[in-house]
Length: 223
Image (cartoon, rainbow, N blue to C red):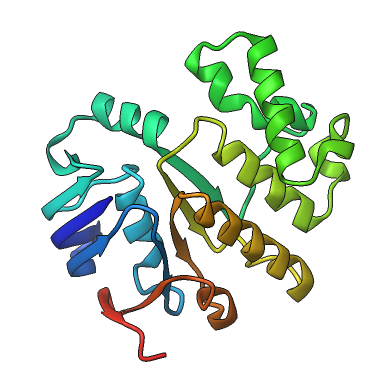
């Protein structure tokens, strides 16, 4: 599903160029669940942005589901994101005045689906994540754990091949964190490929493999 070779990424600051990713080579098989750990500022989110086609590396190659991402223009990258990728972030970024089905259905609205079809799929997904009883609620009426369930439902709307999750349990207590991790494991068991960024070792251990990001370099975890 994912193959990167020698990815490098730097950011230009006034008077200096700051390297963020250094020689990143990573293979993730279809249906695999991979976790990437490391302290803040080590490049984890930058790597996830590259894998999510939200940014481009300065050098190296990246193939996603047999498509050479590193040679695509912005329009092609947007198409890849729409067809193959789902994103879950620590910040859920909902539209406060829309009910849950409309928030979940946003990817469908942008894709040109009818409102009725969007709502129907969104309700199915909300029921799948255990929130069928919250359909008329607004985002501000949810707990943190419920908000992340809605975010997962939204990420699944376009039936992605790959789910990218950046600290999805970072704002949750241990109980809600465990529920979100269990949900991710269930989705992975159904065949969804997942790459998870986390600082929490207990969350990372739900994955098939764990990598450590340190000073912009990636290595296998020793546990």
